[in-house]
Image (cartoon, rainbow over all chains, first blue to last red; front, top):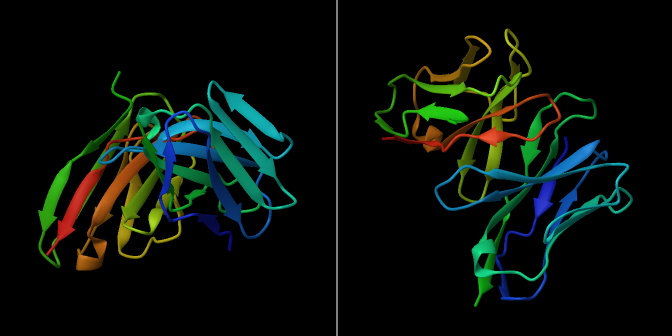
Amino acid sequence: SQKIEQNSEALNIQEGKTATLTCNYTNYSPAYLQWYRQDPGRGPVFLLLIRENEKEKRKERLKVTFDTTLKQSLFHITASQPADSATYLCALEAGSSNTGKLIFGQGTTLQVKP
Amino acid sequence: NAGVTQTPKFQVLKTGQSMTLQCAQDMNHNSMYWYRQDPGMGLRLIYYSASEGTTDKGEVPNGYNVSRLNKREFSLRLESAAPSQTSVYFCASSEWSSGELFFGEGSRLTVL
């Protein structure tokens, strides 16, 4: 079955630097991959979706890449701010067909220090 | 603009008791989901409903039942609660099967 691996160790960076988070999956490449942000005590909030035929996608200070050869997605936050501190989750479909069953990685916690 | 509403927000149960978590969305979405989140485990899919009248098992369905009552509502039932079901439960919805998910604020369940 499909598995998602995100770095469970917290990422600590200085304000203004670029944060890079990694999402690796183990089996077949999904048709798309999503990234979410979760603050303590809150539900996840959608950030970006990238499809298998898209190498890169940007939204303001966020950039996501999708490498189906490496089975990996990278999530970048440029010019990071303390307000970016949160847990970031990647998600993709559990099955090889379009079932809509999204599974999530365990998330990586980002701490941006002023 | 409510989005996804879950009730109750907090609940304490004794082992063996039953309860139902309610979820409603007002965005006219077709797909709805129930996840549980435990420390170090991330979000795990319990059940999923692609559209009104259909449900499907996720990664961890044992001990749970669901009902897609109508397009708006998707409930999760614990028939006989166990301490292993202590968790934070999230309901989510999406317009279509491959779309972004909109999550509720979570229901925090403790089973003693």
